[in-house]
Image (cartoon, rainbow, N blue to C red; front, side, top):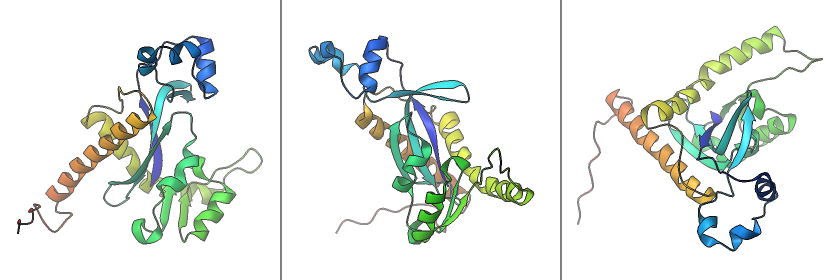
Length: 213
């Protein structure tokens, strides 16, 4: 199951001109001349809006196993990057992650469907209607069935939010964000594995360190 969630960072107090320069991929001259100030400025985080709500920071793009709800692959981008642009980076080969690929309709396109077929995957991505071609009852029913599986990724992000301090970081820059978000995914996985062991999902109840020769 592939999806993404916002990871917020402290808002930067920049001028409009400074923000314009940053969006163009450059750095204001006075920041370059003042290393201490530049060290406190996040030039990688971005603003974006979803459902009329604004977010500032990064995105955690995750591939979640539908059976265990473990994060099996992840990638980090600035917040404005569209979810669908990162699917290939987190997609697992069929022999590793299975053939079925679940995602919401934002990931769906003709090119994506052809690409998944070419790599041996089976698309379970939600279908989307258009103004002139609304979804049929059969497509709506299919989407509903897919949602039963896809909803499991929301459990993962919900757990991160409610159980391990929320999906927010206080680092500066993309590289540090990748480390922090990677640790966030790792901590979630550790907690999830403990739950799976407790529920007897695995055939063992402890891990024994190998003896030193």
